[in-house]
Length: 120
Length: 279
Image 1 (cartoon, rainbow over the protein chains, first blue to last red):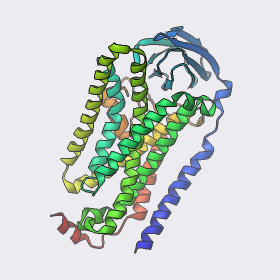
Image 2 (tube, rainbow over the protein chains, first blue to last red):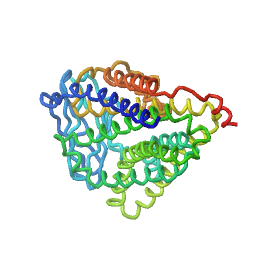
Image 3 (cartoon, each protein chain N blue to C red):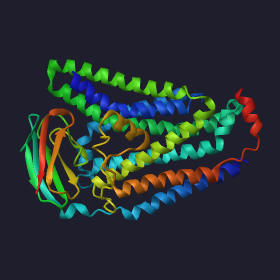
Image 4 (cartoon, rainbow over the protein chains, first blue to last red):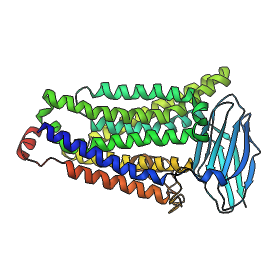
C-alpha cells in the first residue's frame, strides 16, 4: 500500500511538470526590442513631466527614474502595470500596444503624485 | 496617517485572506500553528530581504527581475496548492478520521503542511516586500512626522490580521462535512487565480506575448481595485481585463487539478468508518 501511494504521487508530480513544461516554449522574450521608449522622472514626490506621450498601436517602454530617497511604485489600472522602483534607481515598465487615449498613472505609495500617458 | 493605513491594509489584505483559508484547511492538524507561523516568519524575512535588494532585483533580466521573480514565486505557490489538493484527495479521509492520531498520518500530514507553509510564506513575501519598502521610505525621509505614518501602518497591519481571523472563523462556521469540499474548491480557485497572475507578470516582462489581447473589460461593472474586486481577485482570480493567455492558463490549472485529483483519489473502501469517526 505505501509504495502504491508513492507511485501515484510521483505520477501526479510528473503530469504536473509536463503540463508546466509545455508552457515553456510559449514564453519568448521579443516585445522589448521594437518598443518606443519614453523617459519619466520621479523627484520630490512628483512625476516630471506630469504628462508623457507615445504613438498608438506600438509597444511602449516607460523608463522611470526615481531620484528620491524612498521607493515608489509606478502603478496604473488602465495600463495594467505596477512596478516598484527603489530609491535612487530606475525601472522599465513595458506597456502593450494601446488605442489612442489618455491613460493615468500614479505612485501607489504617494497618492499625490499623478501623471498621464497620452497616446496618439 | 489614514493614507499610510490604507496603503498598508491594501497590501496585507490579500495575504490575510490566504492565511485565513490555510488556517481553515489545516484545522485540527497537529503542529499546524508551528508550520503556519514559520511560513509567516519566513515570508517576513524574505520580504525584508527583497525590499533591501529591490534595486538590484529590478536590474536582473534586462530590468525585468521583479516581474520574473513574482511570476516564479507565484508558480511555486500554484504547484504547492495543487499538490496539496491532490494529496488531500488521497489522504483527506484518513486525516479526517481517527487515523490522524497515528504517527504515520502525522508525518504525512506535515508534508502537506510544508506545502501550505510555503504558500503562506509566498503570500506574505509578495505583499510584505512592498510594505517593507513603504515603511523604510517613511523612516528614511519623514523624521518625527513619520511616527504618525508608522501608527497608521500598524493599524493597517492589524486590520489585515483581522481579515485573516474573519476568513478563518467564517470558514469554520461551515459544517465539518462540507468544509473539506469548500476548502478544496477554494484552494483550487486560489491556485488558478495565482497562475493567472503569474501569466500577467510574464506578459509585463515581455516574456509571454502569445494571446496577450484583452478578452473583456468589466472595470465599469466591478473594478479590480474595489474591495469586492480585490476579494474576488484573491479568492477566485478575478481580473477586470484578463488576456486570452490568462484565461487559458486559469482554465488549464482548474482542469489539471480536477484530473489529478481523479487519478489519485482513494476508493472509499471503508466508507462507514469515516461516518462513524465523525460523530
